[in-house]
Image 1: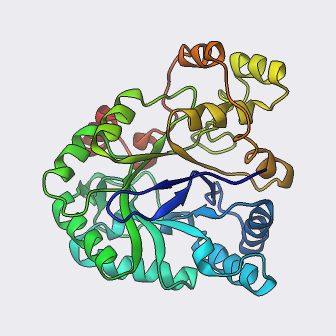
Image 2: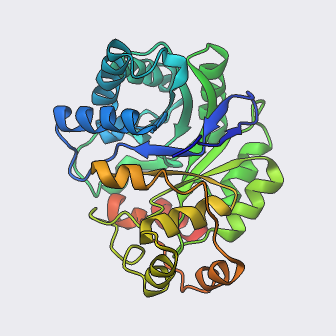
Length: 316
């Protein structure tokens, strides 16, 4: 497998492995299944793990970390990079610090490495019913919430802070007042959704992009098999003796971004790490760059066709 490269994050200098294991399952995996998969991932060589309050995977991740330390799979907590996210129902100035403390309690950790605003909207109350009713969806007060995110970093509750699902417009607004700029913008990106304009904007501003659903979120309610069964990717994979997943992940990595990929299958989670000792040819990259584009995640499906949600969709 070799050594997994790392990137240095702005605003902290903290270093992040460029490939992480996602822990979101649809429907959520039971605690023991998730914990066993995470332990297997640590054995395979993963050191970066991506969770969120909304995924309900913070507790199994925390238990897996504790078990890995007991077993000596890692020598210290500092060897791991843990990302979690502020859920929309906590996206209010006074709830951010309590929310990260709740996530830390779930994880059994004193700090996380990266804390992200999950989605740039706010729900006025907790709900488990989605789509939601219109009156629950209100604008995110980016300035006050970001000030509280900065407080999380200043308090040492997280090493770095960032955002997820933010458009160029939302980032531009944030950068006009941020004392600590967002280190990361985690967004959907894969060979069928290139995010070229957003990547160029973030690169110019020093914001690192992390790609989620780099394989198209196959097996989820909102994802499909368009990436893993793409004829172009299949042809390249066959010629190179690789899997379509490896070709997709390598292409994403070659765009200068990091990525979070999720598999609870032992063989696939190992294969997904084997992308650093080879590269795509210029011809192969060009073929992938010409693939028709279509976004997978649709926030309207998740939250409902409300004006704020439609506005957010139009931006991205």
